[in-house]
Length: 86
Image (cartoon, rainbow, N blue to C red):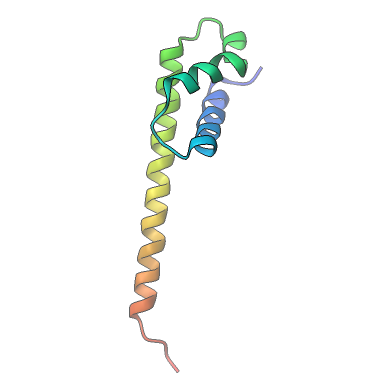
């Protein structure tokens, strides 16, 4: 039986791949919760609490992606400003 945190990460990754959005859709998470075995493996787990955990994971992933993008753009900007030495 997978850990609950593994289900959360899988849900966040699947959602990002399918939709490309970082705001979780209630119908999508309810379908994942029921169809992917979370309900079977963790029958006492609350859907709303699970959705909150997935939303938190999505927010973290989105923040990291934004940081990485800004870092790469900053590197490109610094490289463009610096003249090459012959």
